[in-house]
Every structure is written in C-alpha cells, then in structure tokens.
Length: 161
Length: 161
DNA sequence: GTAATTGCAAAGGATTTGCAACAGT
DNA sequence: ACTGTTGCAAATCCTTTGCAATTAC
Image (tube, rainbow over all chains, first blue to last red):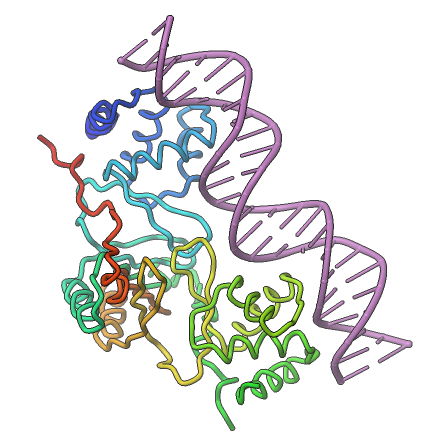
C-alpha cells in the first residue's frame, strides 16, 4: 500500500466524494509505479492483484486523480493517454521517449522554461504550459539492433528540381 | 491551383500510384492553406469548392501526403490530427498554440535542437525527432477577456501537511 | 436511508477497413 | 483490360455515458 494513498483519501473527503475500495485500488496501482501508465497498463496491474474492476471505473478514477493534482496526464501521440503520479518528481519536466520499447526518461531543462516565457512574450501570448518530447531509440534497443523508423524528416519530394 | 501540386503528381508517378482528381483536390486544399488543418477543416475547404469527397478518401490521401514528405502530421493533444504543408517553412520548427482560438505560431529554436542532441546523448539514446509545444492565450483572445484555463499546475493535494 | 458509485453495455468521436462500382494508366 | 481508387457503411480503437444494482457515509 502506497504511503501516499492517504493524500488521495483526504482529497476525496475534502470534495465530499466517497472513498471506495475501487478508487483506492486504482490509486494504489498508479502510486506504486514510476512508469507512465496507459489505461491498459493499469488494468493489467489490477488483474495481477486479482482485482476485477470495470474499465469505466478506471477512467472515472483517473479523472479524479488528475483533478486532485496527484497524477499527471500525458498524450505522447500514441492514440491514448498515459498517467504518472507526481511524487518524488520534478514538478515540471520533459520526456525522452524510446519509440521502440516506450521507455520514458524524465529530464528538467531550465532552458525550456526560459524559452517558453521568451517565445510567448515575443508573440504577446500569456504562457500557460509547454510540452517537450524527444523521441529516439534507447541504448538497450540499439544493442538489440533496432534503428530509427523512417520519420519523414528528409523530404525528397520537396526538392524542386 | 497551387504551384506545388506538380511535386505531388511527380511523387505519385514515382510510386506508381494513379494521379486522381480526388488526390489532386485534397492536396490543393492543403497546399493553399498555411494553417494547421484538421480533417474537418479540409472537408470544409472541399465543400467550399463544391467538391463532394468521401471522408475515407481524405484520410487516405493525407496518409500519402505525409509519406511523400510534402505534408507534416501533428497531434496537439486535441484528440485528432492536424496537417501542415512544408512549403516555405522551416524544416524543423516548434509551435506556440492558443488554447482558446487554436491559432498556431511557428518558431524555430536552435537551443531546442541542441538540447535534443545533448539530452539524447546523455542517456545513450539515438535521437530521431522532438516536439515542443507552448500553450497559452494569444493577444487577441486576451483582449476579449479570455484567461488561462486551470491546468492542474498547482498541486494542493501533494502538500504533505 | 440517501446519495453517489459501480459495472455493464451502448453510445461517441476519430480513424480504418471491406467491398462493389468506377477511374487512371 | 487491369490494377488501384473511391465511396459507402461497417468495424475498430479509445473514451464517455445511461441506467439498474450496489456501496459509502
């Protein structure tokens, strides 16, 4: 049982929401992983514990967890969302993502923080947030001979002859 | 008719694919806009011209356009894709996006290019690409009194009392 | 007890796919 | 003519929603 679970319980009580078995179980799965979990990952984690929970309940609980600020939602462009808890992490950080095995490394960059501010100001925007994702192949996958998928970064057709 | 259409025709011929009316029309709509178009936007553009095209054809043509390198696909986390042609743009650039009106400003940052390289190397990754998006409220929307939606950036529940 | 949650199944939006009719080479 | 495309509808994927049965307070 995660030592942070009581924070979620407290949040639920503050909001006048029932503290249910299902909500606690979902939160505990998320709090006990330092990965960036998909809903499917969370389902698998629940199954491993022998918990049989409706998928709708997982979605509904994730919504509350995000609202509580205890969990952050990400969209890495895979067609579905991923979630990470915020304990013991930098409040704002960027992601380095292996496009083969989906390993995620977090890093913080003051340069990007400054850049957000600078670029927004230059264009008269009120900055709210940013996201920086670097995609590549991690060391381990490289060793197994995986190389970069074609990204359309070179552009032969645009070469006007 | 876009002056770049012949590049798409050439690409199709090189690939042994038929140059159809529909493919030309879709490409022309995309090439004539400097916006970041959703499929719905493209459909609207076609309707304006009096073209009646199946949605599946639009999706299939966008796939080819992306593969050709003439068009780039984006996912700004809205739940659907957007497309921009690559003519007269920086080959690699970042996006500043108004979360209210969806205006997109492009900017280039050498710092981010360097950061991608540096961070990937530090973690043994082979870098392939990155994406940086800054979200905020544009000047025009600010004038109309729009302010930043709550982003969950402050995190009261994580304050361990 | 009362109000909210759960679980299921149905609905939803974006995208894809199967297939008969059709157009490009 | 032959191969590949088009358009429609059905299917798919992730996510949300309606509703009767159940649980938290």
